[in-house]
Length: 148
Image (cartoon, rainbow, N blue to C red):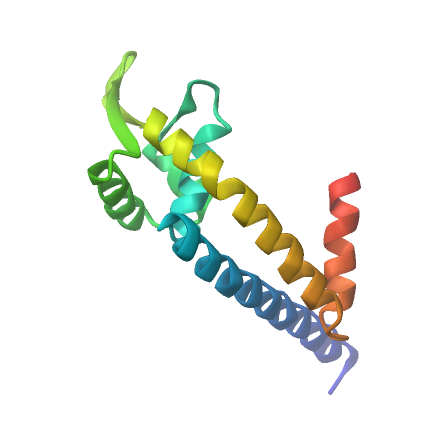
């Protein structure tokens, strides 16, 4: 194996470590959010992304990018959340082809109730991951990002 191959393997190992950390945290968040708020991690991410926008709305494409979902998966997810009264869709005033997804007050209240559970679970999962030697450097790097 040459130097170039070693560099590729180091990056691949880093990617696998990141995926392992993400999977571990996501599994903990999924359990906690389902139990406390009947929300999946991705549903929480949609509500959170919308709550961070001025006016609590985003175009569907923006929402897909913010949640790392395909357009079709975003549409299905928005349909489910709309059926639950957590979101609504409105036509864009300056582009009739555009559709905004908007957080409802019910969605905002559910997000506010779920946020402490999400944040506590995330902190706990990161603390647990920090005790795993392979994950500890990555967890420390995440902490450094918060200060940037």
